[in-house]
Every structure is written in structure tokens, then in C-alpha cells.
Length: 97
Image (cartoon, rainbow, N blue to C red; front, top):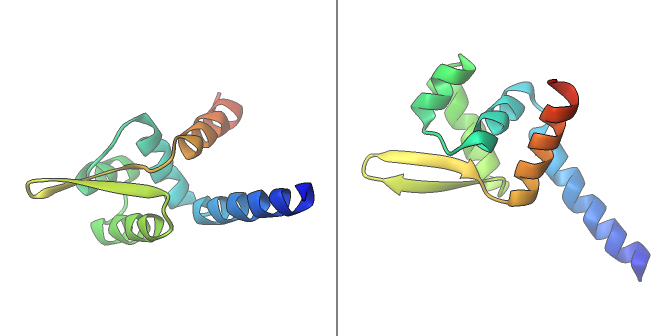
């Protein structure tokens, strides 16, 4: 029974890590761990094209890593689950200090 639960958890974590396993997607998640951002803000922060940022955001949204909040003509992206934010912050602490 415990093995089956662990297998399910490993599949979930593996899926999350696969979604994060691109430098630009990881950079976007690092910025979103701080606070929600618009596409324009992420384009400036990441120094990549709007179409690339949009593709990355759409993929991570489809994979349930991100959520979107609409406010007028703007879409605000944020990390969907607190455990993903915790993971990003932990990796920043380990690798960026």
C-alpha cells in the first residue's frame, strides 16, 4: 500500500520537475514565486520575446503549474500550488546564494 502511494507521489513530482526542466520556464517560475506578474512584466524580466513567454506560460498553465487571473485587458499569472512555490524558493536558497 505504501509503495503505491509513493509511486503516485513520485509520478506527481516527476511531472512537476519535467515542466520546470527548461531554463526559461524555471526563470519564469522564479519570478512568479515572488509575486504574480503579467506577460509584459515577464518579457522585461526574462529578456525574451512575448511569443516565447506566452508559449511557456500556456504550457505551464495547461500542466496546472500556473493559474491566471483576468483584470480588464490584463492577465496576471501566478503559481497554482504553494508546494511548487516552496520548491522554487528552496532551489533558489540552495543554488542562488
